[in-house]
Image (cartoon, rainbow over all chains, first blue to last red; front, top):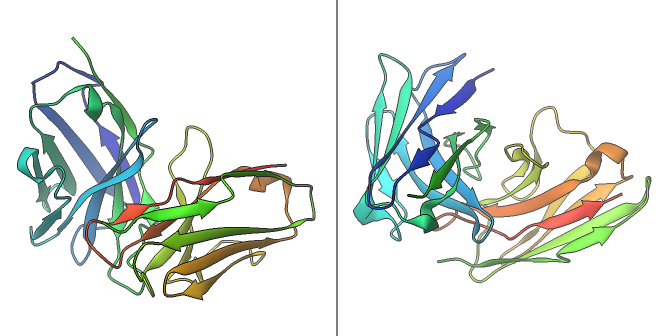
Length: 119
Length: 106
C-alpha cells in the first residue's frame, strides 16, 4: 500500500518561494505519474499539475509560469516549487498518485500540508 | 477549462436512504470522470473511477453512472459513516478539474 507524506514550511511570506516535498513509501515512483493538488476555502480543489517518474510534466496553465515539479527516484521524493506567492496561494497542498489506467483518477493521497502566505 | 457543477450542493438524509448526486460537465468528460469522498480535515478518498468502476475496498453501496456530460453518484442504503462531502473530478481534458462538492449530512 503506497503512502505519501507532504512536508513544508507552513508559513511563507508574500513574493517569496514555496517549496514542498512529498515522500513516497511502500512503493516506488517508477512507472507512475504523480500529481499535486491544493484546496483553499475560496477555490475548492485545484489541480496544479503532474509529473511522470521520467520527469515529463504537465502544469495547470493558471500556474505554469510560477510552478516547477521534480522527482528524485533514488530517494522516492517529489518536489514542488511555487514562486512569487501571494495570499491566494494559501491552501492545503496534497500530493497524490495518478495511475495511468482508465479514468486517470488520483488513487492515493497524502494527508496534506497547510501553507499560509502572510507577512 | 472543463467546469463541473454538482447538485444538490448539500442534502440531509437518513440511515438507509438512497442518495443521488449529480455532476454535470461543461464538455464531454467520458470516460475520465471520477468520484471522491472527503471528510473534514482529511484528504479526498477515491470511490469511483472511469464513471462506474468501484475502487478496491469501497463498499458496493456506492455506484456511478453516466456518459457525455452528465454523471451520477448513488449511495444505496446510507450508513452513518457516509456523512461527508462528495466531489466529482474529470481527467479528460487539461487542466484536470473538480466539482464544488455535495455535502451529505445524516
